[in-house]
Image (cartoon, rainbow, N blue to C red):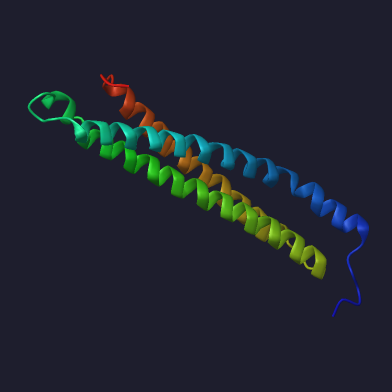
Length: 142
């Protein structure tokens, strides 16, 4: 089965080609960290508002539906970002697996890379929508 292992030059080429996906994976991890931090702040604010007496702060409690929509946008951004990361990892596994087996991998890897970047872009788009929603109304309690 492994009588003809790939050459060092071929594996070196695959490692070189894995550089861009590795940087993308780093960006995805950084974005996920920012998104989770933002979601935690939204949830903390929601808990604070829920704990208030409605008669004391009716205007503040009216902000809860907006916070729920913002949390939904961040949640979908996290799903897209994680999907992008998983696709990027799959891309790297496919590239090395096919190279090790001596099979052509360029088209499949290119397709996975486009999918991964598209999912990353979708995540950024959802994040932008949440940021715009957050800036529509200045929060009264930080």
